[in-house]
Image 1: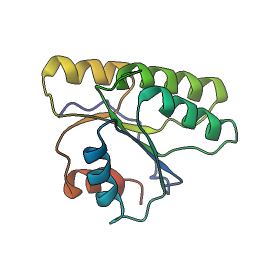
Image 2: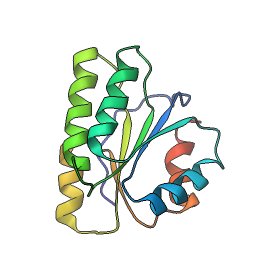
Image 3: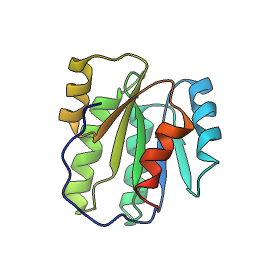
Image 4: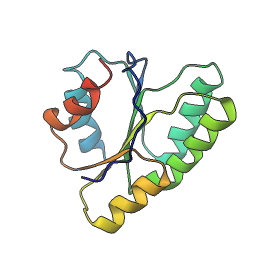
Length: 140
């Protein structure tokens, strides 16, 4: 698992989590896992909708601590969506969300593309409550 180096910061309490997943079965499975944790979450079916939701809250200074982002989606893929989200964060001077790229495909090249786009970590599907829990626990 390739992870982008992070500056040491104290964990933040979760304000919100954004799940971006086009596959309804995967979305249902992940939301079932999320219900095991004390998180509030929103959902988007593609990268374009994710940017719209993210921007709407960001303009009100409501931030997402974690974004679970599918990589391969119609309309706008996860990599392009993350690049846009990072631009919004910079423009509005928001703290960066911790973004996890999700894909059933795995390769060093794909992981590198995800990290270079601004994602913090790559998780291979199917995700489990343990893998999601490790990400969320950093913010509790």
